[in-house]
Amino acid sequence: MLDALWHTTLALAPWLLLGLVAAAALHVLVPRSVVRRRFTGPSGVLRAVALGVPLPLCSCSVIPAGIGLKRSGASDGAAMGFMISTPQTGVDSVLVSASLLGWPFALLKVAAALVTGVVGGLWIERVGGAAGSGAAVAEEPVAPRTWAGALDHALDILGTIWPWLAVGVGVSAAIEVFVPVDALAALSGAGGLWAALAALVVSLPLYVCATGSVPIAAALVGAGLPLGAALVFLMAGPATNLATIGAVYRTFGGRRLAVYLAVIVVGSVGFGLGFDAVLGSEIAAVAGHAEGPATWWELGSTFALLAAVAWLAAGDARRWWGRLATRSAAGQAVVLTVDGMTCGHCALKVETAARGVPGVAAVTASVDERRLVVKGAMDEDALRQAVEAAGFTIQR
Image (cartoon, rainbow, N blue to C red):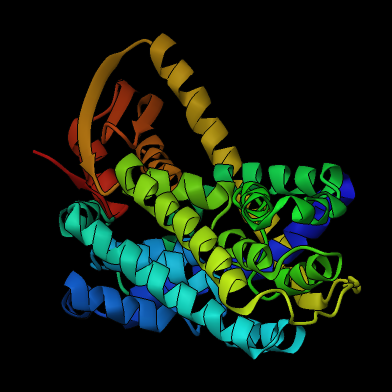
């Protein structure tokens, strides 16, 4: 189990950090007015999907990139279309798919990513994508468009999703350890639909990248799994996992999460069964996939990610302890409404700024309530100035 946790984290870390870098670069280089103008409405959904399909971003790396797109002013529909289509494919995964499973399979994989991304994005637009995006953009912290601000922006995003990442890695490793690969192939005799549903059940919570999952799918096909079920695995696996599901729920809400999952589930099963019906299972696959030693960038990315998560987790623990201390601390209580807090990292910055004010005894910040509670014998004007100097706005 520990070995599976380590190898899953090795596979995830470089792509997640790549997504954070993409989100940070978007935050600095692309004006929010351009994102609002080009990535809103039905045409914005098409642009977002067209942008995302060739990018080599996997399910976890697309989380920060998609959230960054939304926070920069894109509509919910455009951001969701990007998050559905992007992890399913990429130039590298298309070439690997064509090599192992044939060009018809690879081209259908691209078409499936395009269709599901557009359908999901337009569906979100229809249920009110632009309004949801506007609310999120209004809450974005006021930060300078510098590379230092970009680092804060990336940490803000990671602070929002790190608990879901931890859960996702744990469940993915457990599935790898306790669910035999042959279990899916054994279902092929029960019919294409049952094999597709089995692939769906396993792949939905699992972290697999678009390229790394292709050899696994090829091995399953070589063991007897229908190609349609392999397509389900290659669509649903990279497109989502428990970490992505949690991040989508936190960022977009339950209604949009339901659309997101419905599009992936119906789309993957539909395309998988359609592929079997039209082309059958005649394409040969190359089975087997061997893991090589970890590269320097995988190790470096993993240690960087673990260090960042440990720092964010320590901050969340301090915030939890601060809530307890605030309840029991004596002295004057000052309650401020703070705009700009979007995640635990933001709350930690607010609390750190407040603790620097002389006379402060205990501090706690709530992201959901946009509230800062401070106890002690401090100057309230100095407290307000400290919080605003940290880049947040206090409602008067």
